[in-house]
Amino acid sequence: MKKILVTTDFSDKSKAGLLFAIQLATQNKYKLTFFYTHHIPTPASWNFVRIEEYQKEQITITLAKLKSFVEKIYAGLHILAINIKYVVQISVLPEAVIREYAEKNKFDFICISTRGAGKLERILGTNTGNLINHSAIPVIAVPYKYKPTAITSVLYASDLAHFKKEIIKVVAFAKPLKATIELLHLKSVMENSDNLKAVETAVKKIAAYPVNFNFTSRNPNESLIKDVETAIKKMKPSMMIMFTEQNRGWFEKIFLSSKSAEYSFNAKVPLLVFNKS
Image (cartoon, rainbow, N blue to C red; front, side):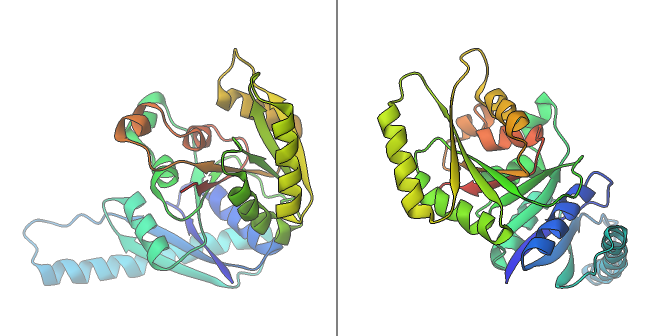
């Protein structure tokens, strides 16, 4: 059974990630682990034993709070809470401990709500953006305004550089959900139509699952992300899948943020991001 690590900070905006993960689990067999991490400050005068005892007490209290928080969401959806687990960890670096826990326990996905970010936050990073840019585990970023609905269609946005490997992962995710797949490629004026036809033929052979193709010309007056958002408005998918390149230099990560992470800040539909490498 595949596993999803679902993060929360108990805020109303963080509920979106939980709602999406629960919806996903109703359509396929996923085991959900609800995860909360926080920093517990203690007086400098305390010794190690006292700090450890205090932290254990706080973890017990927080676990009860997490359980209550999640159970209320399940009750509101009239869904029975099964195959779930609760985990609370102490850390001053939430994004790092989420990645570490997910990788150590071999989760298939990390699910997190995204609430948008201003320009400064984009440069300094957010938990969602950092997870997308650094996690070896695929990340599902869910917009905070998300409302539970059946996942019936998947928009796979691709530059076609590694489509043979990528389409296998897209089909593996969409097929158990019985969701349709639309491959979106924003083509330049220089691209050869024969090459795109060859891609179509190759995908049909590899996927062994219906895939619709949408080769749309780039708008030279708009950014790539704007073109993607325009396509989403037109096609209205249940969610989108993208692949991000993580092995870039520090300068590129700061000033030329990955298209997947950039989209996550203003997501209109849930976004699943796989690491290309």
